[in-house]
Length: 315
Ligand code: UDP
Ligand code: MG
Image (tube, rainbow, N blue to C red; front, side, top):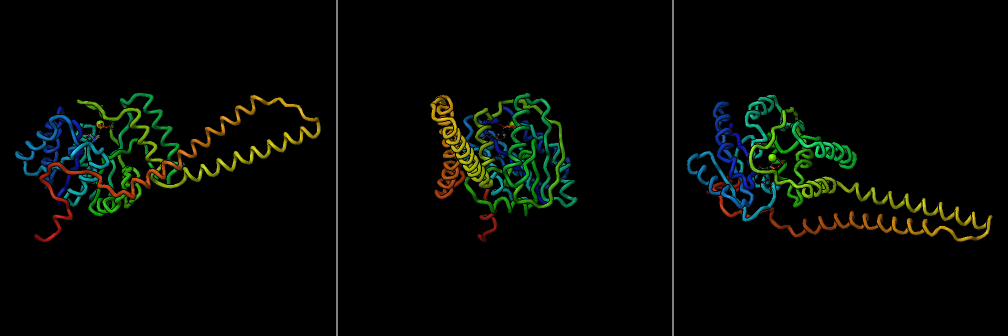
């Protein structure tokens, strides 16, 4: 059984060699045949030359280097496409996904699970991030069809059929947390203590996280559109009721014209609601726009690997 470790790397020069050492030590200890597929996601530092050095020294190293930064989702997709193993493990290069857990994943896999998820606790996270994450998952699980769990990231093992299932989803907007949950198959989860990033820094800024969160909300179904529809209906009924009341009062008590403030508030509030709704619709239209363009998810600058498709073709 060949195990493929898929590792997206974006500016990881400080930690890459240490990562490789720890991961190869651990895999040799486990005694499985393995390959490491590094995806250089357009790093601006020495990540690519370091990976190439590793590849020269170690025949088990495959790499794919992007022409620019395409994002972690694209990197994981490329990794899955180039992984030749019977089992694929996705992990980060920053050692926040302890290689020592791969053994446990393989044990669970041997018990028949197609997806084994290592779920991190939020120990060491800033309070603000923990709280926003809680709120976000509470909200999103009410809005999307697939079940998303806090702390469940991309550190997971996929059986060959689960990996192929993920590869069969070719959408341009990839929200992999949701894609993994969507493909299903027997899945199990275990928790591990979160490790704080040792070197380099997280590429996630608040703005990026916010966008990622929105992607999650919008990539999976049209419930936000449905919600917009209901909100519109609700507001219309409130407005009609209020109109009836005003007319009633005018008929009974005669016309006087207070209500300047009411008017102003109602007009601005409705303008706000309408803009939000237009935004929701716009998001979906934007997504369609990206999907119909059918651009590739990434462009390759250098590689020593071949895709599974290419590998399957006769010479
Ligand atoms: N990464 C990537 N492309 C990006 C951003 C990140 O390939 O545009 C990689 C990064 O090198 C790391 C993993 O994705 O291996 C997770 O990134 P990071 O540690 O910044 O995220 P966090 O752990 O804070 O979620
Ligand atoms: Mg990290």
